[in-house]
Amino acid sequence: MKMLALVAAAVVAATPAIAECGDFSVDICKGEKVAARDDIVRLSPIDLAAQTHKWDGKTIETTMRCFYADANEFRCTGHLAQMRIDFAGLQPEVARAAIERNCDTVLKAMSRKCLVTLRFVYIGFTEQETNRSNTLTVILAKDNLGTIVSGAR
View 1 (cartoon, rainbow, N blue to C red):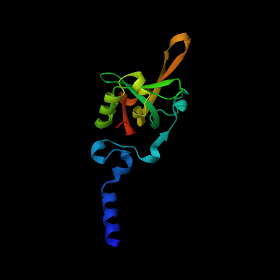
View 2 (cartoon, rainbow, N blue to C red):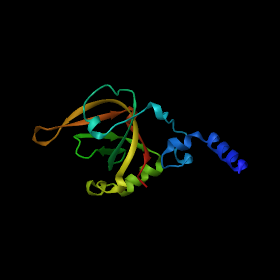
View 3 (cartoon, rainbow, N blue to C red):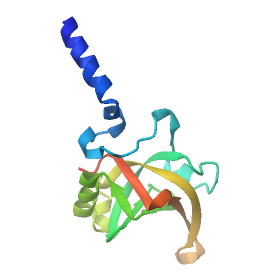
């Protein structure tokens, strides 16, 4: 029994990124620089819509629905929040491919397959006018990149 515990401890010690890869295996997100859990700010889409700079430069984790709009264009939105995050790329590859395959229309994007937990580095926000003189908060991500840590299979 002690031997099994030692082997398990050695495996965990040799692969510290396992916990940081969410539902994805280490080989899927290998090479990705993952923020330490203490450095991640978990926010709701409503929090992100607040238009503040207090999260500038911080790694944000949130759960949203993502839509594959076009080549190198992914749009992620939160339920009832007047906000969106646009990404030029999503990683890991397997999650990006799942979004492209399963979430390529607005109607499909409402399915559970398109609900993902993602991380990105917040660099600010802008506003976009919508119909009826409303505005939409568009969150800006560093390098226009996001990492899906769970969902999108």
